[in-house]
Image (tube, rainbow, N blue to C red; front, side, top):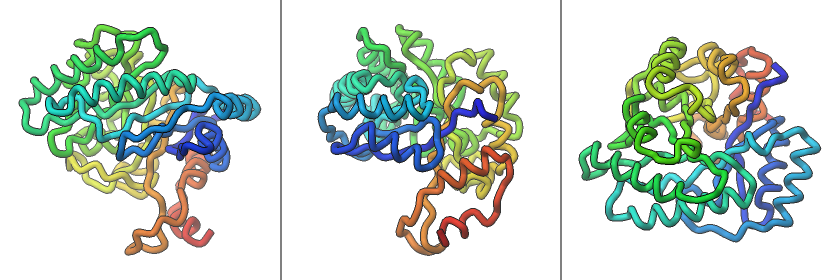
Length: 300
């Protein structure tokens, strides 16, 4: 249990940067974390400040956080599958890879893209072309393609599409995969049969390509293609199934990242009150589901 590498999505702002992200992660009892280097819904970015980065390294070292297990997520509005925005997306992601490298981080998660008005095969070929342009560098940054739920015309909704993209990428040492449990469920994968899925993944792609796992419950039934995350144990996947995935010995050295929703004041409210990560990670470490968790967070 001491070997569990677990964290959550945390903030990153221009004033505190990586140091602020580290401190937030520590406040939740985490030993890794994931962040966007700017707002996920836009492409505005501030300069990376080395002085703050080095201070963050010191704090990480003091608290046994391995920099090589920290994850950056690319903003989800860039779309390599879209012809109209292709050049912009490629240039932005080239710069984002450079920023990730400046921070000393090795892995960046990327939503592959959405076909929108194009045939899926054409969209996949465009994503491959984009990845080959972005990864043509001497930087030690791996792009991890995230498994998607299948909302709209998303690419990367099954093993076949992930395999097609990886097969097309020239830089095999710079491409990986991020499994997302909510997305897998919503795409139609029965996670009570996770072992079967992983065996097929290993046969078709190779288990060595899996670099990070997003741990999320789902508000939706299997195969719904909706992508709505739920707090751990409160969704359709369930606590016991997620625990088995989290503690799967094949992924001991791989970071597990929570992206579960903030808890609101009541069931109707949209006001954020508190991130659930500290409480969810405690449950995960204890391997014991607390069905009063939401109430506890609300009353904290």
